Image (cartoon, rainbow, N blue to C red; front, side, top):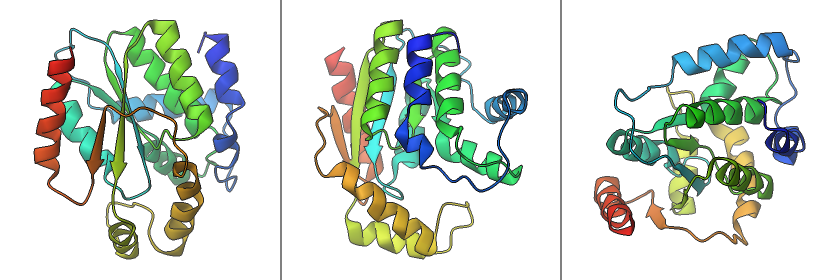
Length: 217
């Protein structure tokens, strides 16, 4: 990561400091291997879109962000970088999660520099996240499409209460995480291009999103 401004923003990212410190510290050398493994699991489009841009979602745990981003990315030939996938890999290898954000944005920058549009599969509601995205946008002259994923609380709590074989957070830990991050969504200042309802017909909403995006070009 060569851009010092973006690097400093990531290092001072308070959300990252609240990541779990359980496990071994990840060294710079070990991080190289983690980055390599994460990229191996990323689906890289065979056709590069003519327009490079970022899609940044704001949405709570279990709201449907990942599903929506995958649907959008498949239609726009985008790379999806998921912070949850990075966390799972770090946990599997016995590392703590404090470098999750650093790894995610390092990979985002790499794909942007190669000319790929990127969807960041994470809740980008924190002030620091917005600052990093703004810095990326300025550095690489990237348009940013902000989307919001709103799902009724009852539906989210229902999803979190169900054991999930896909290893998403479940039970009390997930519910605590939901209420902790819910505070970040009480006074959002971002202008959103589109707001999804994660409890309704996603295919219909993605079609509408695609229509509006094309119309906005």
